[in-house]
Length: 283
Image (tube, rainbow, N blue to C red; front, side, top):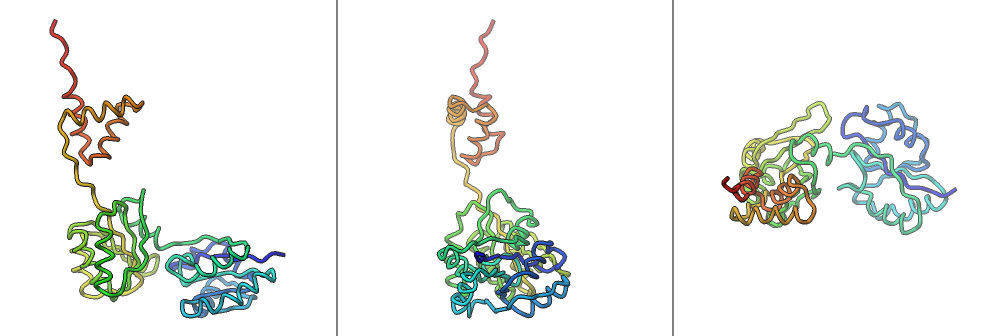
């Protein structure tokens, strides 16, 4: 039989979030590559799962050293289950090097999907979720962090970051400086756990709150930049809508397209269209 690498989504904090597929994968895997063996045994105990496979550590400091042995197990037809402490492997967690090596070796890579702090925080943040980007951990050094944030100042999508609780206040202050003190954000602390806390507000206000010290796992969600409105005359706005209509758009869709392109309020564009209509001829 061909071996396969299975990426397992571990719970963020509540074992009850684990579905039957991950339980079965944990019980049947030939090899369990895990970030923390203590967490694995605690999770197995909570889920009442008996582990029969060989357990090997797979964290940042040993990731590359473990590759030959894990690839050999996969080549022999064994199933390797990769579990990190929480969420999906490879997402700011160990796993990417193993996934790439397995793919290059022609090994089947699949998953038992589970919770993700990225999408969970995004969903509860109250910020736009239709388009977003994940930026992982910000640099630890202040200068590098400020440079990274400055490069994101014009990012229109909602941004999601992981951050250490010890650096959160500094990161929020730097974000307020780069994005503006009033930029909406949400600090999601200890997601799904007993002491879960979601703090929403402007970056400067959140930085002031975090200055007193914060504990736990942190996911930071920051609203994207708002496009500066384009200055167009009434005639130019009406012409832009007319051009959209000439291309086949309905009046409603044409107005929406111009609103998105210019950043102007819908009422402004609509009024421009109405104002530009020729007056009916006098009887």
